[in-house]
Length: 186
Length: 162
Image 1: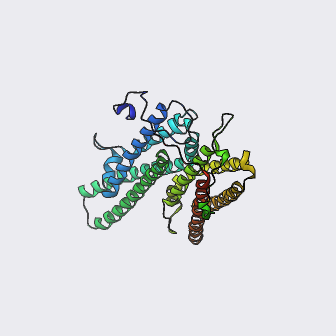
Image 2: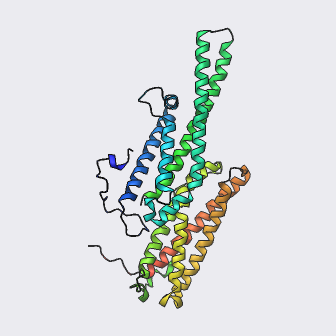
Image 3: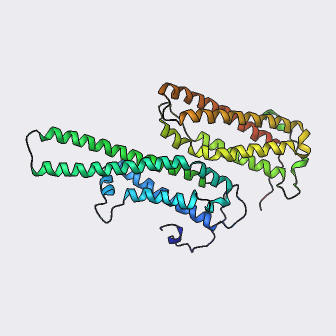
């Protein structure tokens, strides 16, 4: 995983003197690693959303993952979910060293999952719409007929509306995740 | 309450602890620190009556994540005010009153948020609850400030870390 271990830090190495408030004295290494991983994921996800808000068409590449370089937005969302599920919401979470913090995250679990499902569903729906739209557009390009224009215009509107919904859902998921991460900052 | 500033009487019972527990001064410092953070999270967003439920969920997340610890710290404050020499201290009784007030204002905010976080709340009710929220927030911030001032009156100065 591209967490703190791949960040030039030796696994198990203690971080600086920063300690979460309200915690008990314990080995903070695992907890800090989780925090760093979460903050990195938050930044990556926010960067994706910023890109989509600046140029919505970019999400098409990311949804269909047409090039090997493209970021798969669906994979990114699932990655965030998995880290939260395996490292934060679990009873074995290293964040348990700070009882208040861990409890605060657990209280947000249901809401986080709602945002996650909403974003994932929106990406799946948009992926289907985009595939269909691409086929229709290519068909119209190969065999153009009189009167196609109105149909293309309607398809285009439907496609863009679905894209907007998808970006909004991903943006909301990112917003919820980022808002939760504020709790990690002193 | 805040007007008693010139009347600083450090609490005798706040200097030390005993039986392995945190000294009361330490408890009070933690309470103030965490209530400050709760207040800061509350101030950090500017709600609009047009916000849908999802927007409220996102914007209020940092505050809601401080809520349980904030309530716990108010509980700690209640315990601190009711133990040892503080139990019969006028200042502690007054502080406990303000603490109770803070709990009530927190309840108001939580009730309002409960309505605002529901997707099926009609727009007119949403608008009304937003106004209630803004007013309750202002009341809570004022009470938190009172707690801070009252605690500051009696806390011994923090030792120099050097």
